[in-house]
Length: 113
Length: 112
Image (cartoon, each protein chain N blue to C red):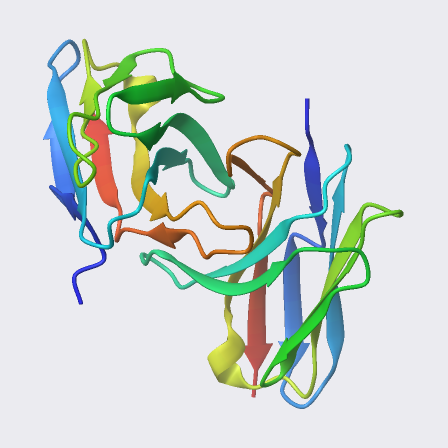
């Protein structure tokens, strides 16, 4: 069972570079999310999507972009990376039924130097 | 803005002891989630609490929800070393399409 798969797991970026974190899920979930987790903190929502073609901002969207062209995929794009974007990024997905579990990927560790 | 506060943030326990982690939140919600995170790992869902008075138990962990007090508790009974992890509560703001606001987490260490 693959669940939610994120790539890459680790990446070092230089300031000003851009990159895309990939996320795919094989559970046919309509909801997908991107969170970031800074050291010693809880997760903060960056962007979310309620279905293909629909995305919306979360709590901390600045410096990021997303797209949702298919149900399975929800890539997160970092433009002009900054040291403040050093964090662990988690993709998650769920099916819209009250009480359904939200499943998280393994995380992507990103360092901007 | 929804705020979620957990306490304590750090908890060191002896094996066999009982303890409770508290999760307070600032706005109306009747959906609360508890997650466990091991170091360097992803989040594992423990409990989903959907209504006032909800209580769920799994092994040595029991979670409850009081929506009127805006409070959830995670009670640990007879702790064992394997329970050492960080525990997060997360609250879904009403009508928010499953957007969760997380607490800062409680780092639990169970000592022999």
